[in-house]
Image (cartoon, rainbow, N blue to C red):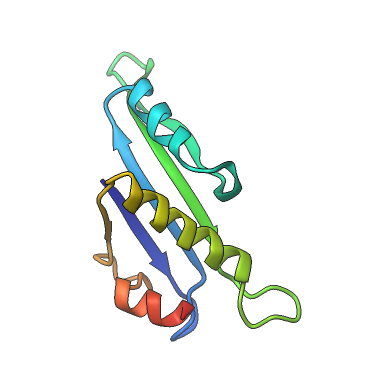
Length: 120
């Protein structure tokens, strides 16, 4: 499942959005990452932790898509960022990936309805 965190620094305007899904194996993450077009810049990576003996170990893998929605020079909207977000949602739906918004943090994270209204 992809969780989206979107936030705003100004009421009614989206600034960034990050969609992230976590996996147990690198193969799973790479397979899901390969589904998305390179134009939306999917990233595949891993999460590290210490094992108690001062050694770093990999504890999980992820696919992440980051979208900047900050206004660009001379434009009130970042149309490229909006297009990348919509492409992500379209590809995720086509491939049956669950997507949900995570607005549990109080640091300006937006709900899905707030986000969709901001980019409409």
